Length: 391
Image (cartoon, rainbow, N blue to C red; front, side):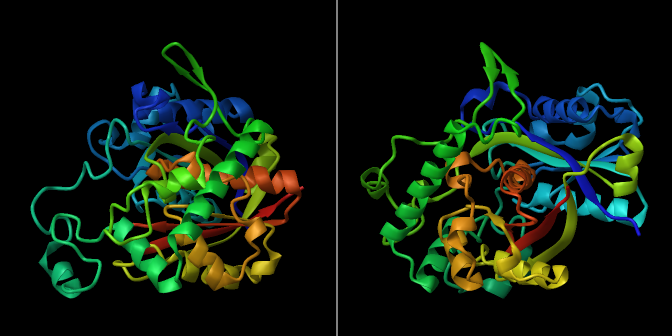
């Protein structure tokens, strides 16, 4: 029986908005991780059957099938195809799911899955029109008209408002959210200082040198500073820019194949893609689907939450992982041990692959047999993946 294994995973450092990566075209940034993946594994890129690439704002520099353009920019053979996908924030995690399905079913033997978003150059929302109702249409607007959290304009469903609704439903106060954000920065800083990100990061040549470290970590932040920030989503709210993921630039990629093909190519698998799941929930709350997705993937894997050694739950906003913890009963010490998107950043279409690259690194370092990743997505969806460490 065919399986799906990951033999390599790489990522760029995550750049802050208007930061060090802002001068790098998203196609070239994608090409950088493709090149690094081939260099680290020693594979001939000609054996790659497909490149499945997540990207949310597929407009401007990220349009016209950025996956294929990245293949060409990397200098890979013209025979290597690529396709770009959008499952909002989970796009590159979905790319891994599609890659696994392709190799397990026998449609492909070797697939690169990953994604990119350079939010400085292609701002979030660039692909949305300006007419009221775009891109939802009158039927969707009518279905949710009058709901608390639905606002007028081209984007009536607002993630920040959803985060406020979640905080209210689960009873999270401002101080609790600020404390969570501060801890994310502390964990990320500690991991960076200990060199824990070094093996997963591919340095990126930039004007004036080489960019090799995540730059979103705020070492000088404090509860006092976080407490001074305004609440932009609701005047009497609790969610701030400090308890939200950072607008970022970055890319990541994983090489997915079968165990048999890995042996044929002389590659050593890191982990097996043990189970995958997708789920959907209320699009107004928008950020709660990681909870049903987690239940679904654990049931599919035949595991319980206690079997998982490390969790990566994307920190789109602090209420998301906090609500997830409350509902799953997972051990908080196993959640995002190296910090999350509040500290490291959230380059939308590249975040799923970034989280998985970090998850694999943590599993290897800690000898955790199982790791679980999940992330909320626009429209009220979520992906969840269970990885099993090999060797």
